Structure formats: C-alpha cells, structure tokens
Amino acid sequence: MSAIARHTGRDRKTVRRYLAGDGGQQRRPAPSCLEPLAGYIAARFADDPHLPAIGLFDELVDAGFDRSYPTLVRELRRSELRSVCVVCQQRRGRAPTTEIDHPPGEEIQWDWLELSDTPWGQPAYVLVGALSHSGRFRAVVCEQMTFGHLAGALHEVLVALGGTARVWRVDRMATAVIPGTDRINPQFAALAKHYGA
Image (tube, rainbow, N blue to C red; front, top):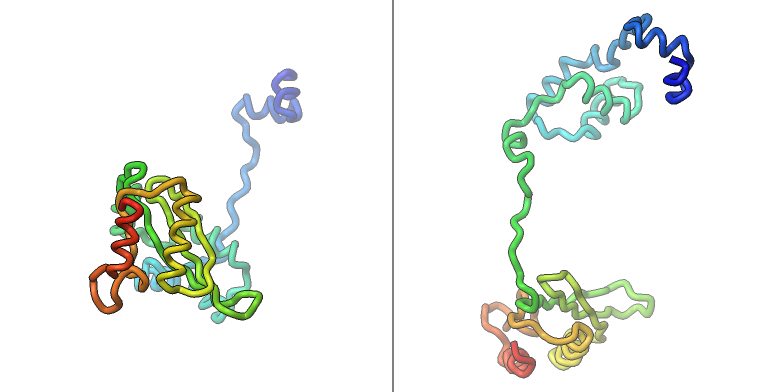
C-alpha cells in the first residue's frame, strides 16, 4: 500500500480505504439549478430542438435566471433536458460535404477579390488563381478589373504557380464571361488557349 500511495501521490489511509471498497461517504449531487425551470426548458426544446443555448439563456435571464451561461450549458448536458433530434442523430458521423477528387494539374480556379478599404483610399482588385488539387494559390493586386489587367495578372499568377492546369474554372468572372450570358469572352478564350488550357 505504501508503494501505491507513493506512486499515486495519495495518503496511505486513502489507498487502504479504496482497496477495502469503503469509498467513504459519497456526497449527494446538489439539485440542479434548472429544476424550477425544467418544464419551460422542455417546452422550448419541444418547440425547437435546435434552439441555441445562448438564445435560451437570454430568455431565462429575462425570466429571472441568475446563473452564468456556462452553468446553464453544464446543467443542460447533465440533466439531459434537450431532446434528441432524430434527423441530426441519423446524420451524425457523415461528412457534411462531398469531397470531389481533383487529380494534380487538372483544374485551376480564377476569381477576382475586391478590396474596397485600402490605406490609399482607392479600391484594389486581386486576381486569385487556386489549384483545386492542393489548394495552393497565388494572387496579384491590380488597379482595375479590366481585361488588360487580367491578362498581366494571370501571367504573373501562372509563373508563380509554375505552370497552368488543364481546366480553368471562372465562376462568372466579368472579365472572362460576357455579363448576362453563359458565353465565354472571346478575348479570354484566346488567352486561355495561348496558355494551353
């Protein structure tokens, strides 16, 4: 027993009582601070099983609840007042997204990002090229979102990435797609062909 006490850092008498099966007097758990509100909480979760705890907390504070938010969350978990949503239970363990396989060098996505709050007071435009396989991206800052700026920035991004991909994706970029249509801008098509896409 002395060796166990030294190893665990406990008193010898505590180890002796534990090994003898005499755990001593166990404290009764204190009643939940949510007991007076259990009916209301159960009704709220019956109405909306996805009710955020912070929303419930705000309602309870307005009704006179004087404990903290962490206390509410702890007691909700302990008392199991939140009913289980069957739909959520069935989805548990499944990925919320579907992974699409992108072989290396297969696809690059182009997009403009507009930065309106710049230190110099004028908007700046960033052309971003992202490889779908690795998520690696490069970007170039431009003064305007014109085709000329697109061509120069596109070249810089491709050089920084070390080449081009077989497929280019351009989610309705105004400099690549004719606005209001699904047709590719002929200038952009020629530019893509020049780079081998």
